[in-house]
Length: 416
Image (cartoon, rainbow, N blue to C red; front, side, top):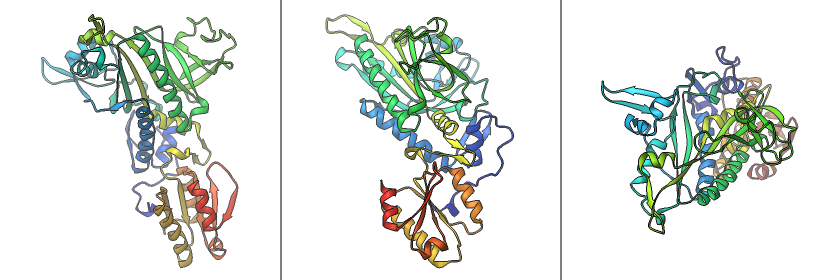
């Protein structure tokens, strides 16, 4: 893409009404735009990052045989009354149609997926089933002040599983744990994201969260240095401040942000909607369920919170909006322009996502500042100096060292 054609423009100063670092950097760099508290638009730059996160999640869900679908955001009140959550959930958006009929904007989709599954599951032969979606969620969040980490409207990947036995659910639950670890590793959060024990509520003894360590996190977790798992704030007293796996009591208190969670739902929702199946022995039993969520904007926000420097964002390569950022200096020099365009055309031919800063109204310092703010992994400078040597200057965003390379050497590194 040519930067001169890019919709967004950067800002030198952070927005005054934002507290969180992720919102400040993403708005300054032009990746998101704040519509109101807790609601953000994704610009073309931000949407590229979002889609890369989505595709990573999709790939990992497909590996464990998930089937993708799409469910409505608008839910009938009666479905939520069946589960008792119409009155129980204090963050539920309720939309009145008339005096006798209301709708909910879906904060989650158990009330929709369960009656849908009822139409197709009737026998043990139909089980297990795993379905997932990427869909807008709406939650009446009272603390919408942490940028993309806490929104009123956001996109979640929610996976739902249906099983004939507890053993089947337990086995799949472990598969999802591994898939989630793969997702966070590929998004650049693997080293700082921990499987965290949480209360199972009415569903089971435990559920699990995936918590990413960050000083800006609103959650507190207690990390076991031996097992590398954690316990969240709500169940630490119940655990008597010891690790549930090794009973180590020397836990380290850390600040973190939740980027995903997984629950064993049991039969709560299947009982509410009459989702049953005929077992091998002929008995009619309720289907056992699980649910597994990841907030995509939360992942994006967590990456920015944890991977940045004083100059801007440092995107992990797999979710960066572009892999290469070519900075073209001395725009009146025809040799410079031709060398920059040649490299740009070669990267396009190789299908390497590349942004070419061909802007004529920006000084070199402004171009470098924007490049650092954008956080694209590889920066390639083409100038009169490099052009005379028939070289390119390469710098990794997360390193200070600059090296001069021939076109062949540079392409080898970019492809790798």
